[in-house]
Amino acid sequence: MLVSLLHLCDSLFPIGSFAYSEGLESATSAGLVTSVADLGDWLDVCLDEGIGRADGPAIVIAWSAFHDGDWDGFTAVDEELTALRPSSTMRAANRSMGLRLLKTWQAIHPDVRLEQAMARAGRKTSGPTLPVAFAAVSVCAGIDRRDALAGYAYTRLAATVSAAMRLIALGQTDAHLLLSRVLDRVPATVDDAIARNGPIESFAPALDIAQMTQQYVHSRLFRS
Image 1 (cartoon, one colour):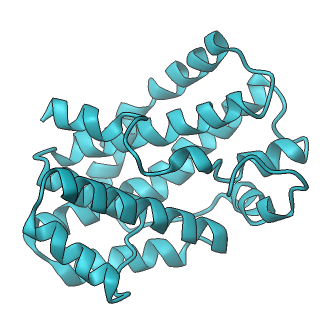
Image 2 (spheres, rainbow, N blue to C red):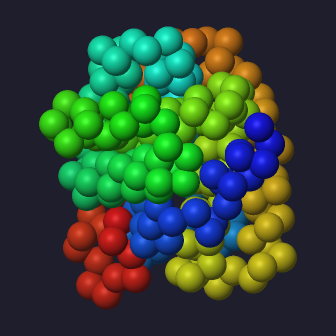
């Protein structure tokens, strides 16, 4: 449902994403992202590698597994996605946001399937990571795979732009121009992830290094 998707993707929704830059703060501190052009390149990597090859395929797999009640498949994709994140702070942050998402949606729209997902999280058999939690909530909200993946892409890209506005000289107009440009490519990325229906992949070394070195930034605004 469109209204449910809008609610889920609203920055007002309390999963705590405002506290994380996902490595962008480290990159700006190191002088790797200092301009609008640099940020545009960063967003492209976030979409093509982070969403297109990792989080997106995970949502496709997790949505189907949760929809079909395949708990082993649901847990497996969550574990694999966690293992592919080299930064321990990013693993913790992603799982923290994922669990917060499940708990908040369950409080608003109780569903026995979400209870089971949270029980597995309590037993440490599942995180859940944010993409996997987003897939589960989308199923419960009646949001199809394509819309779920597109909505997730929007939330993560918008969160990155929001963080950038606090880290570099970036006005609102330039910020939304950049966001609009990368969002234009989201439908093709979503369609490719669904059509491929393949395994999770990960190859974004500069992004990974920025996330791993975040803890060494002298004065930080963000937790990761």
